[in-house]
Image (tube, rainbow, N blue to C red; front, side, top):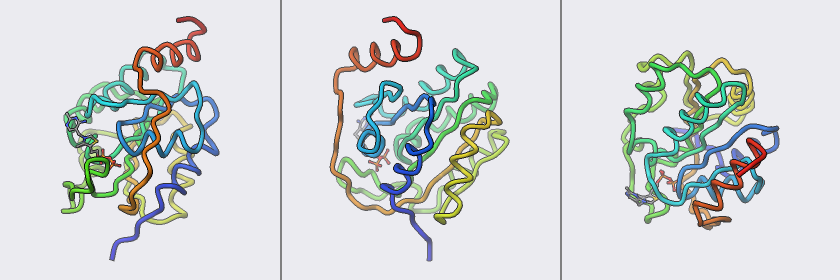
Length: 192
Ligand SMILES: Cc1ncc(C[n+]2csc(CCOP(=O)(O)OP(=O)(O)O)c2C)c(N)n1
């Protein structure tokens, strides 16, 4: 049957090689995954606004074409706004990557089974939307090349990383959107 990676390991590997990438985290577990490994000013945490992580990443990638932008989000968060993949296909931002931590669940709200548990293929949708590359990641050894690809600016790129449906303790370092925005903006532009 299917292989699943540990989301903890995936987040650890991501943040070990992050450099100065701008990381946008979709609400719920992905915020916790990233923040637990490395809380930093160049992380932007969404607390609500389900479906807005990838649009936010797209806007940022277009506004900052010299920076590498990585959206880390859940399968259900992305499914809420699947149409954004078509807009990305139109705009073709080379500096945008999307890492979907796909646990096949609506984790934060009680582990309800989500679309991807039934085989809905987000990476396939990305390819159909003219992403130059997208992949489903099931093996540990596939992870490092996928993460390396987020640094090459040959995107848009999407990796649908199949992770264990383990429950993660929720850690949200900043819940105030004004503070999150000001901190991120200062790290990026040097001013509020
Ligand atoms: C518009 C909207 N609908 C529903 C919710 C409730 N909600 C919060 S997190 C979540 C599930 C997130 O699942 P996923 O993105 O797959 O992340 P996971 O925690 O499973 O990694 C839901 C349904 C919400 N915050 N906003």
